Length: 191
Length: 178
Image (cartoon, rainbow over all chains, first blue to last red; front, top):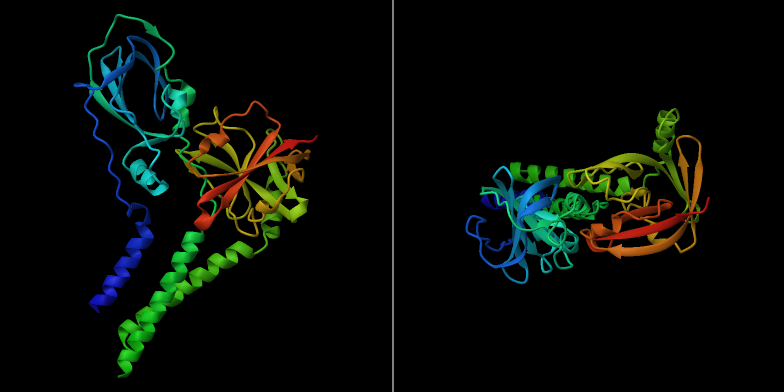
């Protein structure tokens, strides 16, 4: 009976949690209150976009390069409300790992070049922080400037899943497993 | 026959029926669905939408179902070809995006198309447009940039799943003839 329950639970776990099987570990990013890394670009004023957010924001924007694949964008609005965006270049992540990250609040950015970053796909994660608005320096509209087009691009997470082969396969295999179990139990009961 | 034996056979049969349903769903002709959909939408005239897509070379004649893309999720019909009419990112996406399941009774055969073949689209206002296939592409699902805005509004994009366990997307582009 125990074995039966274990098999039953395993099958349902596979069916309903198939997207969470693979583990993925995101890099650690420092807080924008204590930023680190090399300043890639800084604008003390100007209109900026936030990844996955169709709106534009006015304020100070600084992008820190932590290493070749990770960057940190610290935006500070004129009202003192900050938005931290962690940028992670994901050349080595497969689709399942990306799905896990999306479920954790990361947004898929298909082309970093639209945001003034390197070519290639990134994952971006936003969080709020409290900041002190800056009021001097240049007036940024380029480079680190992020357009609404790029912000909207984050909403298109992928092309539609237009097949159901995986459900067909799982359904068939599950049927085979249960029918086999039925035969085994039937034979045992006969003895 | 003991209890666990009965339960196993019962569950096995349920999943077997489910498998048969998935298989039949891919092969049952959708002619009836097209007729019903056309009857319901014949009166739409203010903003003409595609009603029917025809590809003579692969004997494809299917209803077109309006669909939306909201928060990254694509609405997808099992009874016709979905046509993107609205999304959070309408301002950056191409117009005229058609997509559908890769089942034999839907878009499963578009991988057999050849360059230069015709795609015919009928609209709700009675207008008919013909397109000529200009390009094919197979991409990964995350390569959404293939759907980003094109300067040419006379182009349509048609796509479906392809590859092992539907792991890729097969893209067809076609230019309007008239």
